[in-house]
Length: 482
Image (cartoon, rainbow, N blue to C red; front, side, top):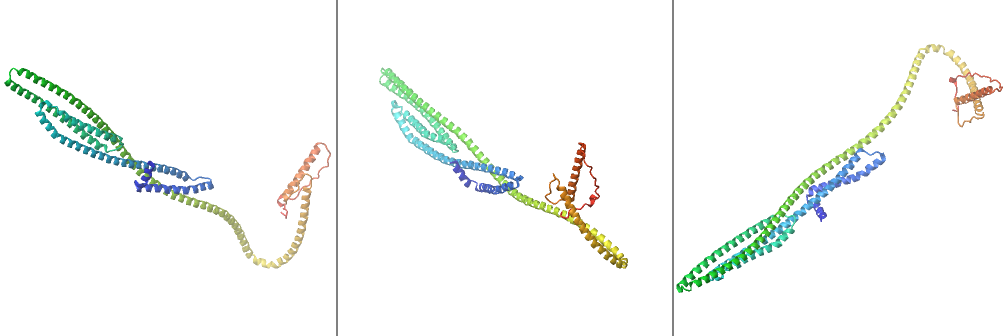
């Protein structure tokens, strides 16, 4: 039942604030559901979670809490609306009960008006017949019957009132009960006045009747005056005893009416206490409803602020992503620029070298221009010397080729002799002159060590012929096949 009221209240109670807040919440939830996989994908690809993901998770958790709180407030508001409906229904029932009580009071008043002529008739008959003056008892019994009927009529009303919970209409009912209480007290006062008046009238009539009889009997027969007077006294005593018994009965009925009145006052006091308790509960419910409505408005404002903040955070995140991509591109461009600068430095170095050589050549060209006149005179001689030099060059080339061929053969023989010794690993690729020289030096050092070892052991061995190498290390040639 509460869930149905909650669902109805979400649609009916405060549609503008709740619908806007819930729509903002659903939009933010859809946004976060759409954004979280991209963030997780980036975290998997980069291996490093950005700082704003934790903030987004915290904000998502706080939004979920706000949504739960909004649902709870909506349920409370629906419950308040349901209680207000119940209170309105109970007010209608109390109004109906008040109408019924009013009708019952009017009927009782009509019965009293009908009984008033009967009382006058009974008084006249009592004046005519003084020995039948007990007619006030039926009148009182009619009043007691009215009170009993009223109490019997109030019992189901009280049971109906006791079954009503959390109503504010009990105030009107308590007012009605107070009015009925006042009417009951008025009835009791009227009954006491009627009883006293009837007793006084009966006493006066008895004394008047006794005096008249005595005077008549004294005139008729003086001798019989004393016995008749005694009979009248006995009659008065008997009437007094009857009135005393009637008074006792009337007192018992009055005590019963007082007991019923006390029961009614107790019920009224309990109803008043219940009314005050229900009123305090109703005020507390109204205060709680106002507090919940205020809290709901505050939560709506907070939710709007949070949604605005998250929109700004989304824009900031997009801006940060764009700035991150720009920074990555800048880093890449800076790296490219550094590479290009290094290449540019190399090129500039080369250009400087070339410029220095060009400057040197230009200076030489100027010197040549200055000496061109002198060289023109020596040109013929130089031409002749050139021809001689060309012939010498050709001879030198031929000699150089033969020397290089001999050197290659000599190098190959050295390599073959070096790596053909036992214990030496043959090379798998081309070797340089330095490697060949190192291998020869190793062989020579091993040979010297072995020779010294044999000498130390006392074995006679021929002396080694020392050969002094004349080739300097700075003019070592490398293999042409290198």
